[in-house]
Length: 180
Image (cartoon, rainbow, N blue to C red):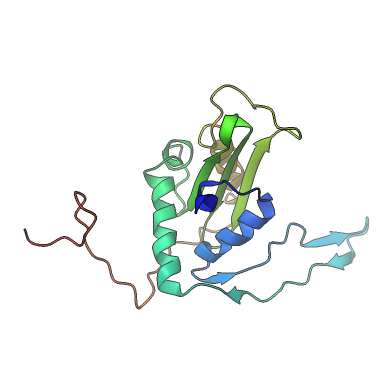
């Protein structure tokens, strides 16, 4: 149960692949770090063959999780470093900090890109006093994505799955709100 809090040891590429499900509203893709390799004359000597997306989650569930992660960027732990810092392209993501401040993370996504930032040491020592993903990794992600989107079009926002239903929740008890 504690895996979603970061208790399991994962590589950044594994988290990026996992978050692709939320960015794509259901299908998981295999991350590609290198798209091609060219020789000094510009000839492509190693093309990356893209793999087909693998459906792993129904679109309505993926959209619900997507919107929760968009909330992290708009109103949660990532808001100051990303949204309030001027990154206005629709995005979602999650900050993370390991015990004893040994590692900090931010895995974030837009409709067309998923990227992660990890900061830590090769041997488990604290990065700094009170190191946090929101203070270190999320600002780095924002800067990288801002640079990327200076050369790319804004991919826009996500559209809810056709079988998604929005309901109001009573914050006092967590149940569906009633007129009372």
